[in-house]
Amino acid sequence: MKNLIKDKKGFTLIELLLYVGITSFILSAVVMFIMTMLQVQAKNQTVSEVDQQGSQVLQIITQAIRNSNGINLPSIGANDTQLSLGMSDSSKNPTIFSINTGVFIENEGASIYPLTNSKVTIVNSKFTNLSRTGTPGVIKVEFTMAYVNPDGRDEYNYSKIFEASASLR
Image (cartoon, rainbow, N blue to C red):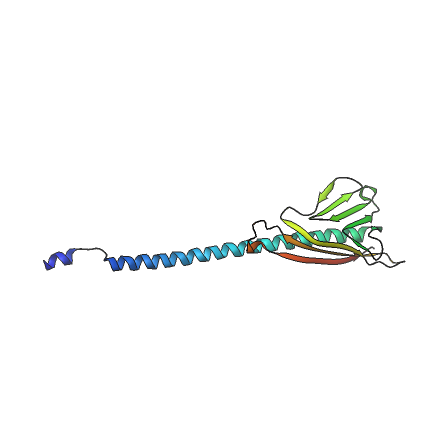
């Protein structure tokens, strides 16, 4: 009888439960790590999208201000959600920037072109004319850009304030 017990090979119930427990602990740790990495990746993409689009819009607007001949709108000391610039190139005169939920540019009544995509939205915005009489003209551009987050997930909550000023040359 002793020989029969020694010849049986296999796992006991306790060994089997121990292996299943250790394996499930390791798998749950790996799954949690992967989930955290995916959330971090989504947050990084959100921040990158807002930063890139905001910087690009700010650069386009300030470059247009520097290359313009005059400021049509807003008037001196006022602020508005639209900026109208007089340009030396007749095909671009006037150049109008409007900020609503996105940033748009329009040249001489032509088609309106968006400067942002549908992944971001503008929350607060204004163009302020800081010019003084007899000076070339200075415009301050301010806007808050936020990532569109219809599901309300934390990793997609991000907004940033962009501001710059530019003067006519």
